[in-house]
Every structure is written in structure tokens, then in C-alpha cells.
Amino acid sequence: MRSLLALAACSLLAVLPACTQTKIIRKNSPPPVETPAEEEEDPIDVEPETDPLVIDLGEVEAGKDVSFEIPEGALGFNITVEGKVADFDQNRPFGIQRITDPKGNLVHDAFTPKGGTKETSIATFDVIASASVPQGEGVPKDLTGKWKVRFGVYGSSAKPKLKGQVRVQSSGDGAFHGGALDLYVHVPRGLQIGNRTVDASDAENDRDVSERIETFFALTSNLLGIEKGKVVYSEESGDYRELDGVEALLRGFSVSSGQKDGTQALHVLLTNLIGDQGRPFAAGISPGIPGAATIFGRNVSGIIVTTSPSVDNDVLTMLHEAGHFFGLNHTTEFDGQSSDPLSDTPVCDGISRDELYDCPDRTNIMFAAGAIDGPVTLSPMQKRVYRGSPIYRAFNAGGGSTMSFAPRAPARPSAHSLTRTFRVSGSDVLSPVERELSSGFCGLNALDTSGMVARHGRDQAIVQLTAAAADADLAPYIRGRADLALRALGAK
Ligand SMILES: [Zn+2]
Image (cartoon, rainbow, N blue to C red; front, side):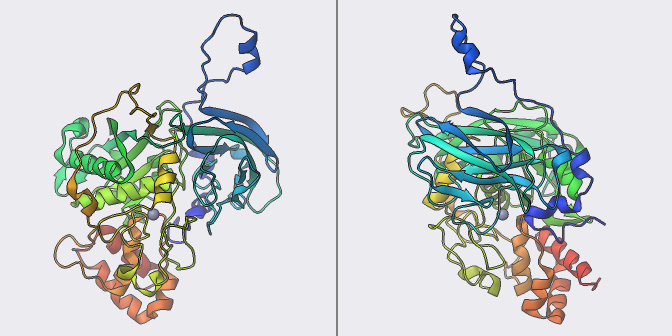
């Protein structure tokens, strides 16, 4: 049986031997790139069809540096590398091995952003891997100049040819002047919020859906200066209402199929279940850190968020998963051993010792258990990572007057004060094991059953897991994970 239980974020494909053969969907090939030489010879001033902020690196052999020029005024860029399915070995996935800045300094090495402890730029859910700059430490303030990227194969010296692309985010002068995020909201037929069924064909006018979207944008506006852009609602098949198992998840990540690559937008699929063996496993999930910016219809093209009765929970989950998709790691990982690459985010030494509520990063959107206390925060470097992604439309100095965007979302004074809750009703007091399971709101947190036994003892773990699995007030993913852990322990 395929199981998500044992999955680290980078090993999902490891349980999917056939998956890459059948699940890769690519409906939109980018238009062929015209060579500049041909354009120069043309006496007529032909408008080039290529976007100056999209740099096609062509096919590059793994292990060789390829250079590219970042123009003045950039806020950041996202590099994607794509290999052939035939070249993909799930135990030795390809990815982005290193990125070198114009002065020769590495900002990304060994598939890891500088300062980081975990590889984030290896192909996991598709034959595409991506990395962003900025994503870690040591990124120069001015990005202008000749950068180098080297693709590679993780744990191997194989040298397949891989196709690379760089998509640049630019404000014209390199300073952040605000921006607008276009959001595609995919709503499956039959989606439930609380006890209500949403009319997927008219989700735009659904009060519960729009309250979540408006609150999400109130937060992006308040925290990031990124405003609500165009919001497009898309009715989807009822098959997306429950995503049980890896293949269903991959379908969910690629729900943007049919969209034009290169369009600056974020795609989010709303669903009622992110599950494993029929049990809720997470409240939200991103297919990568970062995702593949503006490449659609693939297994790395958007985030998935479950709806619950709580607006606050849903919005915090959405902003957290978007954070992964834009390039952010958890501030501190639950193993207590690793943390994000950024030096200005606090690290919680006690996270694995059941000191969740004392963690200095507990208000951070990217806290591994979600922001569990308010007001919610992002550090300056986290904001820079978010703002450097090409997923949204950055404004130029002067306020982006050449772009069409919706008026600034009304500031919701309480937007910072959203609170994550783990119970539908009653007190939010959790047992130690339940506190650990609360990290399951994010699908990138693996269920660590053996760690739980080591920390609490097998008997105590089973007692608390049994209580959690039967507690109808608890968030579904906590109950679901408790049940999955009991099965893994052979206690059910
Ligand atoms: Zn997460």
C-alpha cells in the first residue's frame, strides 16, 4: 500500500515508481524562443515575442555552469530545471546544484540555499526542480549582473541534459514598491465549508469563500505590501473534493492545466481532504520550496488548502503554503535539528521537547505548527524572499500605474490577529502528543511515529493517540494523523 507516512518532503516520488511515467501533464509548451541574431538582422522593428524577464537557458548538461544576465531593477528570480522522464531516477533526482552570484559567491550549493540545512532544489513531485534567489543568506542587495547556475543529479555524477529557465521579478529599480497578486481559486463541485456546500459554479459570490480570500489578501497587504489582484474562480470536478493518496495530490497540484505558462499568478485548489488511506493527513500542502513559478498544469504548479469551519485557520494555512511555494522553509523544523536558511528568523530549540507555545518563532507564518499565536509575523528576510518571487506583479516606482489591478484591499485592522485553533469548540488545550500532531496542518511535515514513541514512550504515546483519534472536536488532520500513527504502531 502506498503511504504518505514515511515521506519526507523530498521522497514522495520514492513511493511512486510509476508515477512520473503517467502523471506528468504538460499542456502548455512555452512559445519557441527567437534568437536575437535573427532579430538584429531584421530591418523592420519587430516586437520580440519573448519576455525580457524570461531567460531561456536551453538544454544544459548537468555539472556544467551556465551563465545568464540579470537585468537592472530585479527583486529576485526563480530558476526551474526540467529533465526527461526517461532520465529520472527517484533515488537520484536531478535539480539545481548551485547558483553563483556575479562576484563569484555561492548563494546556493549542494541543492540547498546558503544557510540552509535541507535540500530544497531537487525534483520531488515532477521532473521539474526549482530554486529562488533570494531564498537564503548572502544574496547581494543589487542582483544586476552575470549569474551562473549548475544543474546536477543528487547523489550521482550522471550528466543528463536538462532544460533550464529563469524568470525574473522586477520593479524597474530594484526597490520594492508594492505589487498585486493574481489568484486563481479552484473550487471542486460539492466543496463543503463547515456544514454548507459551496456552489462551485458561483464561488465568487459565496460568502465563506470570499471571506477567506479577502482575509488572505488583507494579510498579504498588511504583512507584505502585496495587494489583491485579479481573482479568478474556476469550477472543478467533484473528484478534487477529496484528495486521498499521492496520485490524487499530484492531480491537485496540477489543477492549473490549460493556463498559459508565464502568467504571473498563484493557483490554489480548495478541497475537503488531503488524505492518506482515507484519513486526513494535512490541512494544506505545497509541492515544493519553492514551487515552479508560472509553470502550470504540472505536479509543482500550485498549492492545496483544505477548508474548515475556521476562517483564521484556512487563511493562515493558505499564507503558510504560499510561503513555501514562494520559497520559504519552516523557521524551525519539528525534528529540532534543522531550521530555515535565514538568519533573522528565530529558531526554537525546544520544538521537539514539547515547548511549542514557548517557541520564539511561534507567531511566524512559517512556524512548523503554523502561527499559533498572534499577531502573526514575517521577518524582513522572509518578506524579501516573498517579494523576490515572480509569481505576483511587482509595481514600478510611481505605484504601478501602467498595470491594471484591483483597488487596495481594505486594511482589516485585526488581520494580524488571526489565531490558529486546533479544536472546533471548547478549550484549545492539547495533550503533548496532540501538540506534536498539530504540525500536521502542513503536509510537508512528515508523521514521525517513531520519534513520538521515543519522546513519550510507547504506552503513553498509544494512550494519547487513542484519545486524539476519538476526539471529535479536534482538527481533522490531528485525528487523522493519530489514527495513522496507531496503525503504524500496530495498535489499531
Ligand atoms: Zn509548512
